[in-house]
Length: 563
Image (cartoon, rainbow, N blue to C red; front, side, top):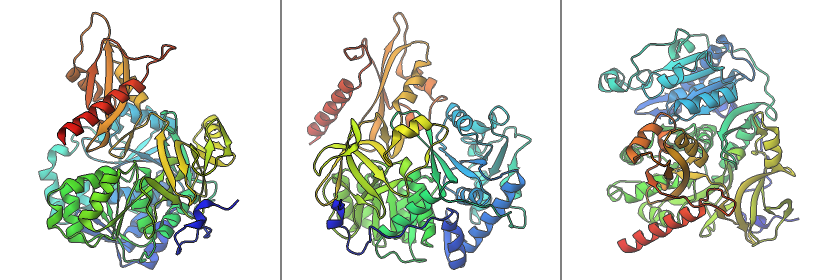
């Protein structure tokens, strides 16, 4: 059967292009030789060449092996964007390890659960008060046995490196340290000649990327070396006219997130580009760097582009260096896309994917038709079909509504230690996304609805069940339902509806304070509403549908009133 997208595929891109199957660390090691003197990372003004980053990766690999890392050892990264995060990622891979990404927003219970579930033995982090104390208590009480601890002054330019400990002393951890800690400097203190490790790209897992999948229960997606290398190559093919060794990419999205890991880090390094690295997205800092440092590629999430749209500074800045922007992580509102393109003169295209696809599966063409509301066409080597939700083997016709399913070299090997969930997610060789959509006669895909309860807060995944379970821990809570509500700035925000036990009292501030130590900042409800009764289905289950409809109606009424 001929694929519909081939009738209108971008003319300069071959859908049937060969996709290499190689170890993921070659995304960096090959450019480190080819572009040795080129800038690789720009971190708050300090620039590292490809040769320097390549050497640090080799030293990190040797350091990890000295700590006992062998093929398949799980090495966790509990880091914000920094040179540490890039070097530790590729150093662990060179040592034969499997990387496990951890969000710096995690609370201690979430860290503990993921460390135990993944079997993470070594964690790389920084000596910051918001990070180090959360992992300190996990050493010895979980599979975690060693911490590698870096600091920001060692990667900052002079004089920031001297001033940082004084200006930011409140941000630094000053308490007791674990005797098994290893400093970042000592990790790298070796000859940079790691023992060779044989890697089978097709079967060896490069990254365990945790996701809620379609159930909201965190699972480790096993992304092989081949999966992640393929997705970087596919994204490169999609970027028509990319200039090897000459592009600059803005790295303001967190690398622990799968979209940023692939598009901001792996892709940028693969093409020998310079990453203008930001620890986190701060609007004024990003605008300043676009104006002064002249990036050519800017990946982001819809809230990032919406924030740029709303800045009064945009019209006074020179953003003309940016050739195109790619939006992912959440649906891109058409209003945000059109306004951004009018303000900047830059093309903003939307892509689509999920963790289990490493993650990019489709994207709108950079040069060609961008259909309103479409998530684009399949990347090279990727087959997308719409199947019957009740019979995932049956492929539907163009225009029919069903479940979006993906097949391609970027699709995960399965879920870590979850064979039943893997079998349910990958059917007939296709990854079931849990998303409902259609495909038109020209192979453009339209996302209609998400059948999971996942809440997308500024590009971050929030699983209602996780928040609900934390709220249920409060002794005064009888029932709770958590939903995502429309939010102008974040796309969605978290709202909790709570019924308090008879005879007990509870207020919003008290419950919020209770939750801070149990869930991440991005998961905290922005609003908590107490009700005498919560809606239920006919069989007595708590129902979200009515609450979501109420909130959407309120949001629309407020927008209408505001004009």
